[in-house]
Length: 95
Image (cartoon, rainbow, N blue to C red; front, top):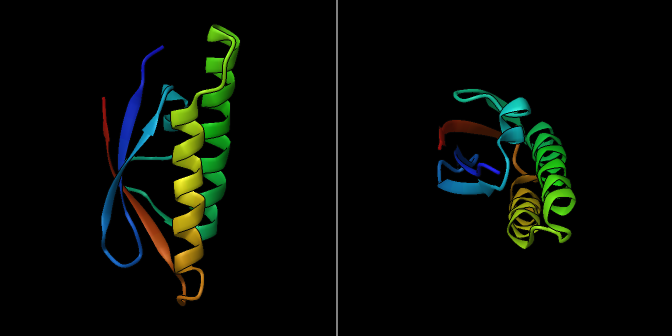
């Protein structure tokens, strides 16, 4: 199963490289796109949950890296919710 990393920019301009065990993330996030914070969270949640389900189906166990990445994204989102119109930019995919 090919894995992928995607580099994002948070509303405060800090950058983070995120991990997915599946290319399914490319169906939910677009390189160069800017998403409202909540939209980014929902897209990430959907993509990483599907990626985890693919790992579970193939290997019989959950992907702790995908679930950990989702948890980190959820934690970071909490930090930016008070900002007016927070947005996240997907900078690039790293194959």
